[in-house]
Length: 91
Image 1 (tube, rainbow, N blue to C red):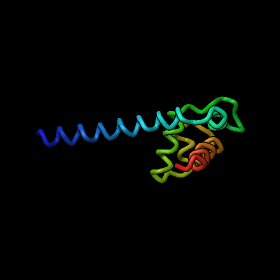
Image 2: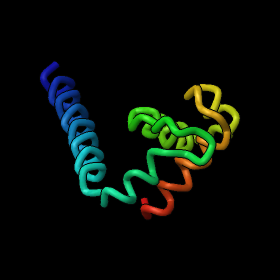
Image 3: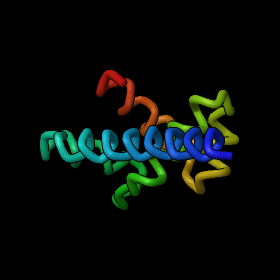
Image 4: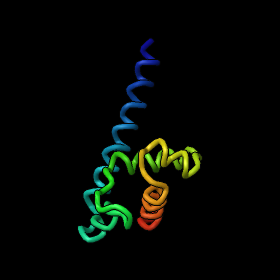
């Protein structure tokens, strides 16, 4: 029982560390680059960071662009934009 408990705590700590790193990365962006990352060419509304994380997570799982767009409620162009912006950041 205690081994399982310790494993659960370890997994939670890893997840928290990843989330903290994501927030630090987002805060370190240069303002002009950050503005470019949150506004797409087709829509003046910024894409929320949570949606970006969802898109990148689904992409890393191997889903198609159409599937990702459908699940994230974004257009295919917005989905491509989020993925390309992540590549430009070198991550």
